[in-house]
Image (cartoon, rainbow, N blue to C red; front, side, top):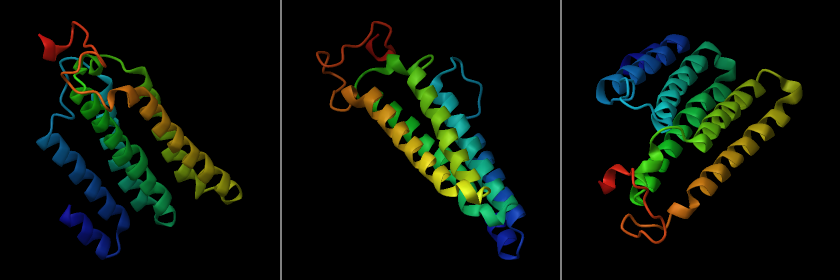
Length: 180
């Protein structure tokens, strides 16, 4: 990561951003199981992988197109960090509500959130390349992000005030691993 800052300070933005992206992916690959093959594939695990890759691609794009750096960094912020925060929030909310069973398998609404996050980020990124429709692209990206937040809140709203031991509000399924 430090090498990336050095490369950027001597005027090579592409190499600086690329070094940061490589550093990010290496660190996550070394310190977390994010890129290990999962025993059971889950939507949150896939969302985390896509978010990390998107963050790295955002840095590389920011270095490759310095004139469109702000738009490129939206890949890092929206479909990278933002998506990572929503995915972690999903795990936290469902975990504290005692609904670990809902984390396994395919979570359709979270797949929509992932797809819309990439749509919002790429719409914002391309706004800098098409000046005639820039404002409409910015609006589309902002409204898409609002839609993402509404979907997340609607899907998890009923679990926000539930506690793990409160079986009346959110009764656990029999296949919940925490209830065995």
